[in-house]
Length: 265
Ligand code: IPD
Ligand code: CA
Image (cartoon, rainbow, N blue to C red; front, side):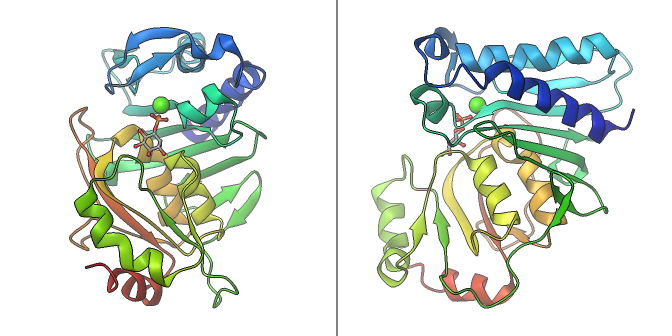
């Protein structure tokens, strides 16, 4: 079985197991702090267990780097790393806001740039975004790409959750000059919507995003033709460590990148 098929099946199983759980009291159960530093909720644990059980069932030889479970070695001869955010947008999932997803990526080495496969499933409707390196990006079975034409409405995604007042001051001109700024609360799914052409640029300069929140989106954006840069406007890359926190900019093309980023103070 190809790695992308393994990740897609694991993601499908998460959808089946959590689709009726979101927004219920049962979703919120507190399991203490996970490896990523946030409180693990019951819905996070159910989703992670689904993936771990499936990998054990098929004997998938890998090391899992999970947001809640931490590093789980399923073999002493692993083929690579599975970077797992079984529920991205946990606050939305617990409250029942229909914008949360699962994010699974496979990497052959300890770097974002070594990711070969990624899957993001919208857990409120089952839509699956996926990519394998060099093969393009897909929504279910249809190829997707970032928005190429001049947009009728320019949609600017900006993650401002927990942003410092200093960062908000820097970003202010963007809010002033664009009437359609958006932030939905699940980074991986926002990257998938960007890759699909629903946004023209997506910016997160908070230095807070974890590897688990970005890994699958990294490959899907690249394979959909998007530019992916760090806050120094260099090609985005990082190690897969639990301490790593990132800023990034995903842009549909150089023109919108220059246009929006030149507005930052
Ligand atoms: C969070 C979401 C959110 C982003 C946070 C992440 P989680 O992931 O992606 O959009 O603003 O920085 O931690 O905790 O729901 O997996
Ligand atoms: Ca999570």
